[in-house]
Structures are given as C-alpha cells and as structure tokens.
Length: 99
Image (cartoon, rainbow, N blue to C red):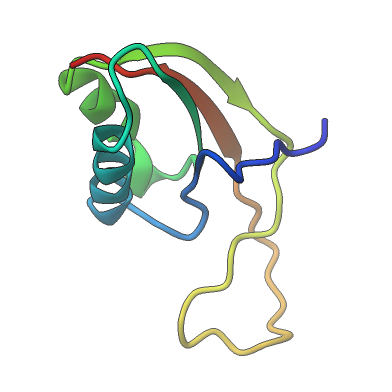
C-alpha cells in the first residue's frame, strides 16, 4: 500500500514521545473543531502513549491503519549509509478535532 501524501497533515516519522505528542498537540490546536487530519507516526515503544494522549485531549481517532514496515528514519548522528536490519511499523491515524 503506498504511503499517503501528508502535505496538509502531520508526518511524525523520526519523532518520539514526548516530542511526538507535543508536535501532534500543536498541529491539532491549529485546526478547528470538526476538522479531520491525518497523522503518520512510527509505531515504536516510545510512541505507545501517543494515541491515548491524543484521545485524552478529547479528539476522536476515526481510524488507525498500519503500513508495511519500512527502514527507520535516520537520527542525528547516524552515519549516512549505515546498515540496519531494524524496520519500523508506520501507523496512520485519522483524527476528528474536538474542542
């Protein structure tokens, strides 16, 4: 399945909680009640609380779709061309904003 175009939404690849949640909250706060948005994130143990935290703000998670695992996003300090056998599950959330 091809990955979605997130030009109007939020791509959190490479961000991990708590920073992933901070970025999601800022994005959601910029929208109006009733708007829908997509958030793509790496479904890793540090991001486990992300969905629950978004719901705790009162927003509705309309769908949660997992994508084929992909190579992880390089982090600061990672050598270009480094080999890794780790793959990261990407998850797409469709969220309805509630205020």
